[in-house]
Length: 419
Image (cartoon, rainbow, N blue to C red; front, side, top):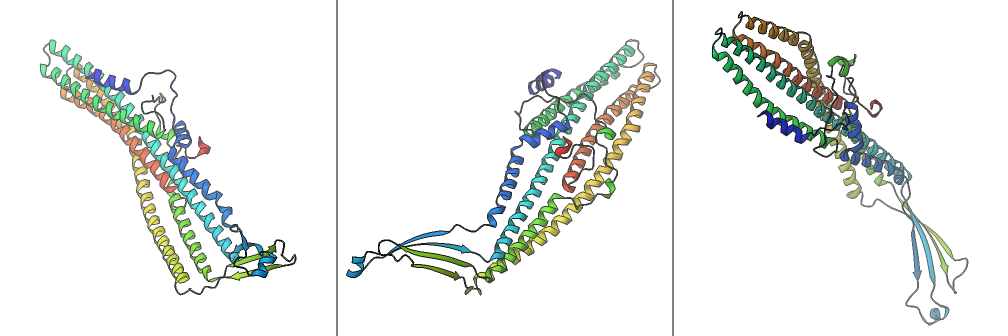
């Protein structure tokens, strides 16, 4: 069975001395550079920005040509009259400024959505990265536990050979070893799945090797919370700012709809040409729209825009409540897991290690039974495994909080400047 999970890991992650060591900074750099979803979001932002100037511009002018037909004999003698014309439609000036402000707001809204997408991918990438890291640590602990059980089995075998303890002690040790074999097999599968997910996020071939730093990540040095963590609020949230721009956009669109009652203009210049054309014959014209159908068209447009503004405001209120709730929940989780990990580091793991060492010595001298030794062994390794499981949950809570709140609360790399 050991051969099965060993082969599985070797197939998924072949040994390569040239593999680049993946750090949290390198993970984010790769995600920001190669992720197609993020690239698409950024292109949308750039397109909205490029469209701003077009909203202040006039529409294209119209060029016209006219030639007389169905002429009488005298007119045919002189030849048909030909006229060319050029006309330009001009909206009421305030409409151009309103359209430009709407496009600027749309650009800023997409910019906030891009930032939120970036933080969402950051949270996902770091969570999967540290999940892969914790699976690797747990896998190593399970292998170490297996070796510890082998030592315990040898101790039990030596004591049984002298008739001090019954054969059941040795049999119990072998049962525990078999259980560890099963756990190793399951952990190898989860380890491989986390690697596949991480490679997918990094936009790399699924079976690319993942090489992690040999060092153990430290809670205080690598993921230390900022000093003003308790004062965290929701004002920097990209999700909220995006909805605020949605409200502003809806308000500006309502203003533009109300400007539908204002007249637009059409300027026209005409001039005759040809053999029978009078050189001084030209004409200037101006036309103006009249909101004759304001009881239907314009009023309907204003009513629709007003309802859109109302809907945007209500959605903003809902998003604010949800974000505030999420921030409070995630803050509570971060604080809880932070304190829990400190307890593991300073108390539980040292105490469990000391208990196993003393139990092993006591069993060798016959001062404690085999069951007490097994309990001490299980306690140590389950405690260390729980530590890494809670460390992964802590990372999930921290990165999730940073995504929702829109600001950094830890030493984990946050923005492009940190990479």
